[in-house]
Image (cartoon, rainbow, N blue to C red; front, side, top):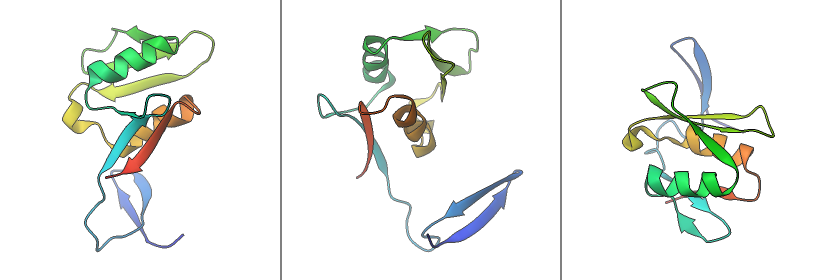
Length: 102
């Protein structure tokens, strides 16, 4: 694991290729091999997996699964949907989603 540790806004993170252009990522639903291109597509997939939509925070899209303590929180604007959100979905839905480089 090589790279540079960056401290910003009280958070430390590893930047693996600090000189390279950041690689764009894509969330893919594995059973259908469908790219998640909008929140509408993602919501359909999550609802079919037993996730429920929460409407508590107007700035976020939130999903909860009754059988777990997991909560998925996403920025309302899809253009702010980043790889960290994608990996959160992957971890909470094993064997259903994958993050791929574009």
